[in-house]
Image (cartoon, rainbow, N blue to C red; front, side):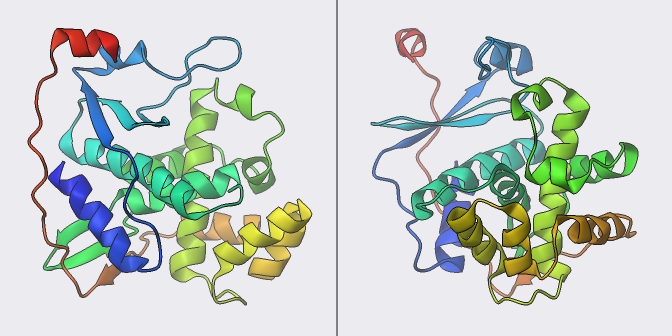
Length: 254
């Protein structure tokens, strides 16, 4: 809880004009293991469980981050990933394409507020790099504009590559690429909202179409190492409310 509070504080400092506070309470629900969590996984239109390690449920009177207990580092990545989705939804009024939404959430998921007295953002998630280097690269057009997103969610390797390539593209554009616009991801999002065409939006924001970016991204992920962003500020660890085991009646109601 204290790390989630620190993360929220970091986002508020990085984006001073953004809304960082929530009008409703946010609860983190931890289930004892993945087997217990499977029962509560989201489902597709056929009732099949979607393969996800955690999710953010936004309700009218409360928010819930739901996930199984896991290794601390992976658990924090999942929490930061899901909270980033909420932060984006609170501050962006137009629809965000799926690859960008997931790529941004993964980009901030490796946040560290105490990295050698500084703040680290954009470190490589090890699982994403493994997927990129061990699986067949999916054409970027199928990531940016998948023909059947629901069927993609039924195949573990395709899901992994969707997340991995989405993260890699956001990482490349944000950290390494020389873009023709000052805020390329925002320009892309607004252009796509206007015209509904990914190629036009890519050209407006990045100066190339999807096929051109595909070639650049394949070269980028073949690098031996990738950079991150370090800010000369350490985000103070804020005290959060103590975690408590829930009463059985409250568990059943939830």
